[in-house]
Length: 360
Image (cartoon, rainbow, N blue to C red; front, side):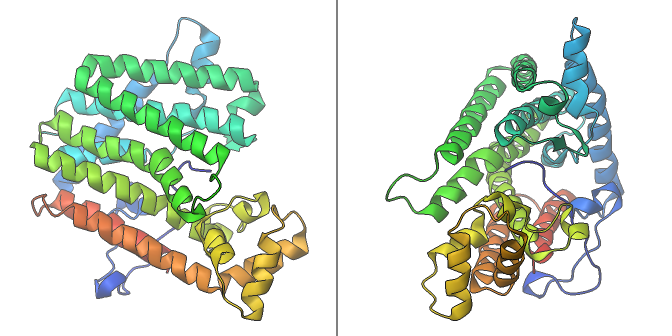
């Protein structure tokens, strides 16, 4: 459920949230809504990301050719490298040329890739990043073991960065596991389903993105106050991105969201708009009918799925979910307050604008 960030395009010219001009995203970062106005920052970030690609391939190599092939399966499938990107942007508040910055970015990306191998087993996913998933190409056992191998490689690289990197990577790994367990078990009796869902996203998505931004500051030599601000921003922007994906699955067409609209609804995944709809006590006919349909579970019937999707798109629940996303985006912006005004900070702020705008 919680995986790669999808990449809707961005319109230019109109006003963004709060009346701010909507800025055009640039270059290869446009898909993520990232605005880089300074060529030196852009060159620095690109340099880090290019070095990450080389080190990723080298770091998963094994004496066993099969392990190398399976471990490179997702590395070579691509992806937006959102977590290394945040490492590179966080490093702009220190010295981004430090060699440790690249290694730190590889640690977080290997950790992320490892979770994808495991997620595909748990979700029984046949495809990942447009290619057959490792579990469908080989077996569940192979996918789990390759995920474990990538975790081990990440830990090995973290050890070379020092004890603080090992501690942070281990604590992040623990949060990832707690989040997956919480999602698997579901809310306990008496738990608020919405609060439970937000907790799962913070653990499964926000935690690693927070560590990515923190690593950027830490291993570039940024001052502690700046590193803490980056970590707070990373956690919040990570949750905001995932929540906005929830909305795009309902409100967008397939071109914008990158997948068939209503996929989560069809599979019975209780995303934020659905949880708000189920918790609603609105007595109007549409809200009552929507609750009736959603209460049946996965919507495999095409007619019921289409009806529920239409009702959700016009529901107060979707409006409330949009406001929640906007609140997280603005909270992420507020986390940047301790950072100096700079092109790197404005780039991070542009992600907040993008998230607030992409689901409106």
